[in-house]
Image (cartoon, rainbow, N blue to C red; front, side, top):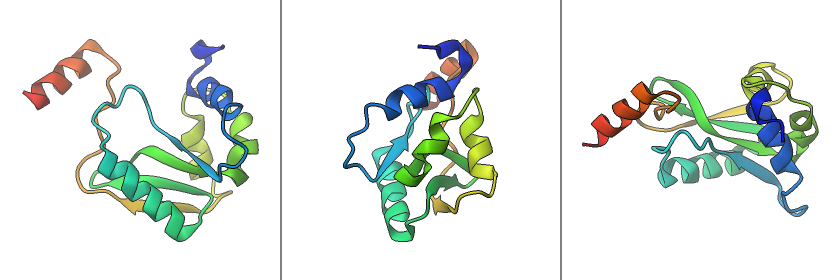
Length: 124
């Protein structure tokens, strides 16, 4: 595993484990613990309704995880490199992208000790 090369290496590793009957995958980040099941369900409903290649959560303050990728994007996902590669794919214009409205702000991405303290403070 090449975890030091960014999120894309984890995505590539996961793609090999997806059941061949699956029509899509949902990408969630392990360092965003406040992503709610309500957000995931809304993303799934929005993606299913639009049948776009990609669906993203559009929070009050911008786009954020989780993301939905149709099987038609899996080939491109296997060729990603780096940490922000999925964002480049989403913003490339090569695939139709559905923005699914999710109330609230993008969940905190906990990358540093300060982020962790902010997360703990927000839940206190």
